[in-house]
Length: 478
Image (tube, rainbow, N blue to C red; front, side, top):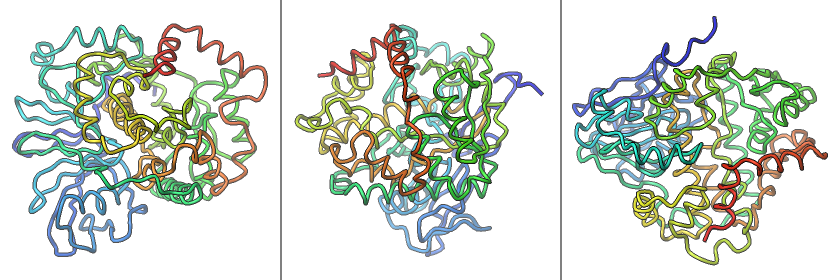
């Protein structure tokens, strides 16, 4: 049966009333968490991988059980929250207080209305029709979204007055409706990891996630010609016969499609090329409403393609970028010679210097002032791009197809940030990870054909106004 559009499916997300009542979208479960003293310390809402948990945690008939006592928030975050993987959020209780914690990658987006105290996954989820229209910040939307083409509103801001976004690495006090950072705190990270140690730690954690997903779900990996995708392929070596691989588009349509087909044939992967399906204008408008008018990008147009994926769950390469020094690849040797500033961070994110953005990110940066500039940019990519632009789309995208992110683990991201920029480079760390996981996966070029077509592709990008504007912001950031 053909996919009829987002207007026909239940939106994705979690909604929490001021009273504490919780409403989950289909496919999400409520799982109690107890510690070794028999105390219920939290409820987890979402999907958790039973086969990929840190030592001391287990999922059974009674829920998630920790074989150690959990006395404080920091211990909960590092030993429980970061020890679980999947797509979820957690709400602590009892002696830990009432705090909402997204999983490490912010898989389930969270916003809240300061007036009503309602928490949900987008402004559309927490506001009624009248409030949605009354509070809509039309000028902000026009400047930050429409004027940018494919733009997004970052930080804690949304497109609605009195509605704030919770970023990954933060917790929301459910009594006071105030957010605070829980990771990383000063002292949590230092550039003290060798390339080999980082490659082992990150590679094995990603492999554990992929293997658990393959065992517990009818899952597929989104496959491209890129490096993040290549690591996921390598991580699937031992489960390649029980996991699928999907690429959007058709053969000879582009680099991703051609190289994915070539690699799959050589490595014996179960690969599917899925023709792009465009959404109707009405369903594109509905997509934008579901995400709270906080971003506009290509998924708005092509999301119906997800419905054609012949698997229940997809694994994506999101959160791989900082392992490749994504925001400082052009000055990797000198990036830490100066401290980070908000204008510099916005420019590297290729975002405009909007006063509202600047004011919001000043507070964000205050909590990271102890970090070298490369780490600040790593955090910016994870929290200010993925946590807002990418995960903010979940209310629409995951209504069509669930997804998980094997790179979005504390062990992986810590290893990436703890490796000095000149050591991890733009390829060195990932190349070593792939060599550890599945060397044969690296016999094919990464993000290129290896011939004249590579030069043509770069030229085509720079002939587009939007790409050129973002390139100039990135390269001339100060």
